[in-house]
Image (cartoon, rainbow, N blue to C red; front, side, top):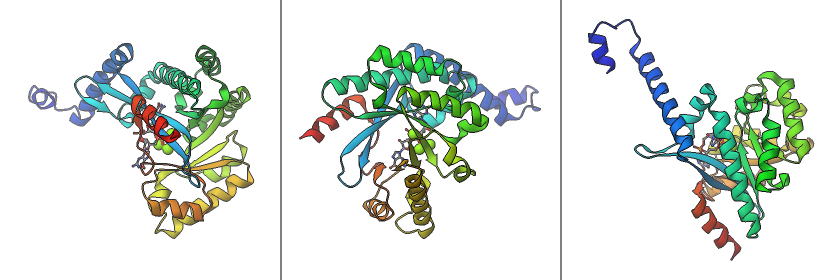
Length: 277
Ligand code: C2E
Ligand code: MG
Ligand code: MG
Ligand code: MG
């Protein structure tokens, strides 16, 4: 359609720009429908204690199961949801689903912590703390079994974000900082953040088994975390060699395809039952 329009005399449009905005409009409309029709699904990925291989929790990761396009990964629609503001409705839905499901697992004797990703946009949402409290009350999940994952992108307004996180922690919810080490100012602000856990970005884990710089960075993050009384977890673990290198450098928690890919609720449920045996 871009080409035919060009022939009709609209050549002054940058075709890639036009294609993008068209895709955006289509996506927006589709997403609105998708929320109404509950086309979104939550997958869960285990978090592991590296020493014992025991599961300590799970991360909720959203998927869009589109009736024609199939599974659309979050990297393709979360940015659009953020730009359009639809992340507020979607984020609330995700949080409610994750809390509801975790309560079901708790009632069955699987007492694990669920981690939910939070967008920058949500942090600056006026009624975020009230919304979270309402969901906890409605689902009857104790705040101690909920963790929220944020990235440093939320700290555009440092004081405002810090105040919101403080309120969230006061409820008893834990905060972890995702993709740590990828931002340019990580080390300068980490000491002043109300954060319980540092998630070491997958880029340092990818080559940790044969790259001394990555080892040094992981070791430094672990040291800083210990001195600030924070936990650490490594993301993106795919190889046993990476586990060995993490152990050597003092990182005792992990997450990655080596242990399990993110799974649909039913499959994760199966995994929990197998674990118990
Ligand atoms: P993230 O929070 O850093 O999540 C980790 C991503 O790495 C997930 O991708 C996960 O499936 C993937 N992953 C886990 N282990 C491995 C591994 O061993 N190897 C590789 N190559 N990848 C691994 P996913 O599910 O596609 O999510 C991508 C990003 O989208 C997330 O990064 C997060 O920033 C965002 N996202 C996902 N779900 C949500 C959500 O419910 N709300 C919000 N606001 N953002 C979300
Ligand atoms: Mg995350
Ligand atoms: Mg991450
Ligand atoms: Mg990420």
